[in-house]
Image (cartoon, rainbow, N blue to C red; front, top):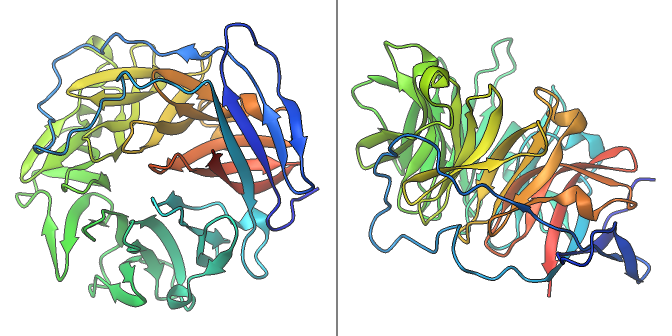
Length: 397
């Protein structure tokens, strides 16, 4: 059974040394279920990865409490879990491309098929198509707290389908690239409206209206930028142009300085891939890195130290986003089978939490937690009663 618009249930997250059982329904009001579960958390490893991290300290005044701080984990955290229903005639299965949530609780994403994508906004109670992007085959990549929406469109129907970057703010749509020979995508935006743009995959720029500024004016590197914080620190994956791609890895860039982040793999395995996915305003960076065993694990770079965030069993893991409190979301799953067997994860206060520990018996399988805002709201992809859906988890006081 697919959920109707507005269908939701609430979850209670918690832990106790005296409980290790499955979820139990503790309340029902006709449209919501309250589910309570007590679990023992998985402790994260605290041993830093080998190597000397580069100097990645943010600008003065930007540093917040580190992830491994002394904040107390609440004994029980209640969440409401909603299935976001696509607008118009789009099916639930059509939402499968991109998702982001800002600190106002607005979700931005794209829904559609191979032939046509539609950009949408939602807050869990409503969902609507973005009218300014309705004429285009549009993919939304990010949304800022100030309402900047960025992504790319396919303005021409052709075999090549070259992308064009856009920035949408207060109903003003700016197409950033007039060069039809250049494949362009806007991938992230900060709260100042500064936008990351990639040309032809590996040339990265910061767009500050009305100009594009290259991260690497010398063109000595191939840089695929992924995320930008409010002080214009940029992270992604890159390598020296004249060297093999695996010689590089996750990087952090700021004000003309580029530093590569040490990998979890060291020694003979140091050619393993690594990607920095996201950076918060405290300068904490998360992503994925190959390790010495040949698998890939989520990592956190915090105050110049790189930590292996661990995984479920022998599976791979990937950290996709971190909020300004240091809460991290992502997934764990068998190699190359994220869509089939993945498990959505939350890392909070040195605790790895499998979000599916709290949904057993509800019909939900949470596959990938994609983003988390400073209010603790989480968006991602999952399956409910066999039907794919985007989910939104709202903390409940």
